[in-house]
Image 1 (cartoon, rainbow, N blue to C red):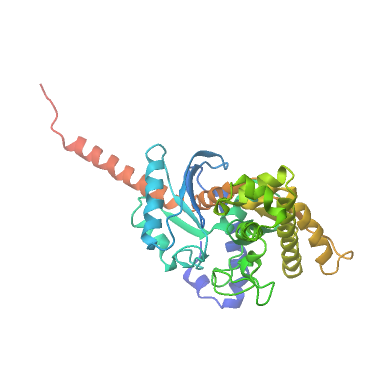
Image 2 (image 1 turned 90 degrees about the vertical axis):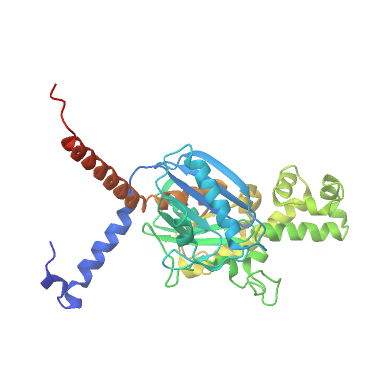
Length: 381
């Protein structure tokens, strides 16, 4: 038990024990979290996915809806989240809610500082939702949540140094070391998609040009296919025929489907996206030197059509190639549901507060019942 003298001792004499204690507690927190169901919400540029997840990462029920138009107020997205949580709460005993948001979340995991594909700007999402829901709320970046899920339940199990790359509407990223998500000083570490890879390149919604996600993401894949279709390129005849000339109907999943069927243009587009992916991974390996890269997000459904070219490009561009160990590159096992599962599992860490408060309410009620019983007149007849 610490005394006042212990706490007022010179900083240098107690720094190491304090840091060791805190570090151990954080690393083991997922092992001591209550085994209760929680809700995970994954908010992307095009969809909102919600699900009830148990302590082993199993999804008990899931719901999905389209992301409200980004031109509307942030409250519209918040209303959607609340509706999904309340719907799931009707059928499950929910103890906490985790939000995986496609944007920059501050170090306190309360505010969404900036979301390129949504209308959130310094939005106090956690406080707003906690005021409307009767359970604790945790907010984190969606890629951080996905990385946590893959480390706990998926392709990253057993890895001490993991980098997650999520390929969806854009590119998200996360760093996980020794069982801890590295969020950086201000909470925005891992925004790999906005590294500049082509100076003066394509304009990005973040405001800059030439960002990595403009060359290796779902948006990039669809943009390239549509440009070839609009130009009436002979290589695009297959996909033009498939959409009956409605070029706006070209989507990433359609391109992947046609590539699997052998459409030459679609195969080539996925190879291009994969090569850019490999270039970016090589740069990250030079900076972070992880043991494993896990590739997730909707675009990763292309599997070896995408990841094969990425591995080849990674080997060609890796600095010191041939003289250093190479990180393995693998597809995420949890698929597009990783962000939802990870957000729910992270929320389990704050579910303790709800359980304690609920237990105190039950104890107060039981004490009141005992008191009322003692005060109740006895039937002496």
